Amino acid sequence: MLVREYKESDLDALRAIHAAQAFDYALPDLRNPLYVTKLVLLDMADGNVAPPFRAASSNGNLASAAVAARHATPQLLEPDDREVRARDARPARTASPSSDRILGAAFLRLTAEAYLLLDPCSGTPRERWQWLLALHEAARRDAWQRGLEDVHAWLPPPIARKFGRRLARLGWRRDDSWTPYCMKLG
Image (tube, rainbow, N blue to C red; front, side, top):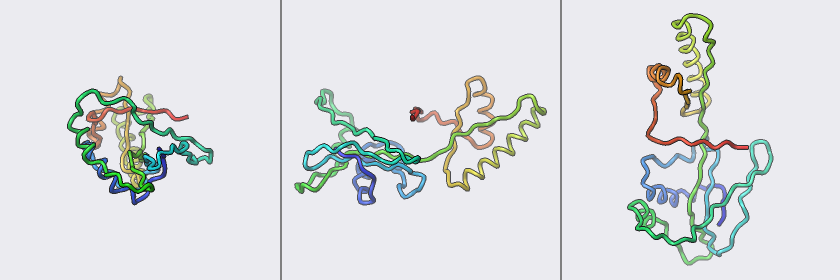
């Protein structure tokens, strides 16, 4: 197996994998510069195992990326419909020893996390709301001009209900349809 940078020639195979997964989201537009990491996992046609992918990080250091391992355990349960569609939609392997089959891909898209700091001891509640509106609009415009497509906010539990209603008035929406996870790097 080998992890390498994405190439445009990978797109058809990735479309097939995406369709086979049957998740309710569109295949990302990988031409979008917000996708800063685009990696593809290959099954090496010659059976050789490649060394782990190494990529230069933004600060110039080398970072080693983990290479996924094959599952050696046979499937004991009947596959669900999504697994059957995934198996049936896989690109066919050709007999050519130079044809490495794409097994998967990982993409990372830049987004933003919002932080708001307002002095709770200054001004009246109405004034603080006006300050928030001014900061909100300036930050929204700045993020859009920088090319960002979305901003996320994680509200502390003590203020989530009340402040969440205020954010909703400003066009934010609570998104409980997907379960968020976070990985701390470094």
